[in-house]
Amino acid sequence: MDKASRPAPVPPPAPKPILKMEFTLVYDTYAGDLSAPSGRRGDAASYVHTIQKHVKDAGTKQAELISGRWTSQTSRNFVLMFNGNPSLDKVLCLHSTFAQVLGPHYSIIPSRGYTRVVLNSVPTMRETLGTPLPSAVALCAELACNAGLKDLILLGEPYC
Image (cartoon, rainbow, N blue to C red):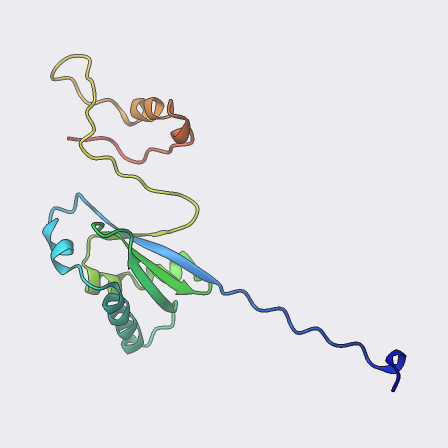
């Protein structure tokens, strides 16, 4: 066969991208029992394995958990990595399983799209001693003066 009569080589199929979605279990610092998570905190892989076992034993196929990690060495927040792109509703169905393993004082948030920041022990000025703390709207306006926080959305009222 000459070169002209040979069929053109078929290119290999494009590799499929690995899809993953992360959700963060954010510890509620106002839950009251601050000692439990730090006392129960352990190896992230063992938590993931325990959650996977609970999900398998329950026979649910809501979302496939493939990994997990603490957000930092001292944080109580735990990041869960799922295979594919499960919806928040599917992950929320597993909330009771997460509570069994890590404790009940967690909220689940997607790890993409926004960041949650909790500011504790922030000194604020009051008009006069004994007057209430500034409102959430006033705090948001003050924080928005910082260029990095111009799109800040403040959820909840400040309290002491």
